[in-house]
Amino acid sequence: MASTAPEPRDRDGSVRMDVTSIAAACADLDRTLHAERERQYPAWVYRAISAAIDDACFEVEEVNLGGGGDCPPQAWAVIRYLLLLAGERVVRPSSSFEAHDVLFRLSELLLGRGCAIDPESGATVAPLRGYAA
Image 1 (cartoon, helix red, strand yellow):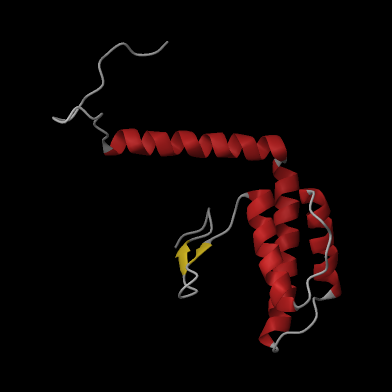
Image 2 (cartoon, rainbow, N blue to C red; image 1 turned 90 degrees about the vertical axis):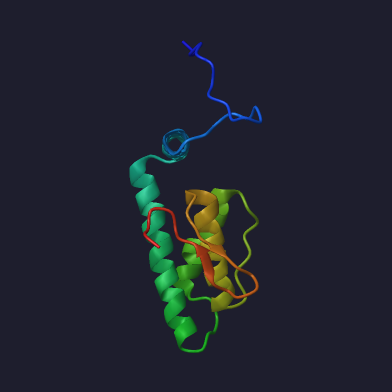
């Protein structure tokens, strides 16, 4: 049952928000996102996809540290599967650098994790969800 108490308002008539109500709204949003993720993928499937993406990223990063090259075969197998899972067109990345970008995009798309990158500086402006900054 909804509360019938009037909402606290500022002098200009706008609804007053305090830290507690903002934190509660954020917690509600987190619970909703978690429930949706669980609906899409049970926890064990989420962990399996996450681990596959992490392993493929490590493999691609090793190639990139060596100057780059073709997308490694095992990473390509993971990317191919994830593209199918996401309902996207299956196209092999043309390089290890592109493979890394595709893995990050699929991680955000399928698992809701990722980070925001400032296009000007290339700096990370928001941490991966679930990780400390």
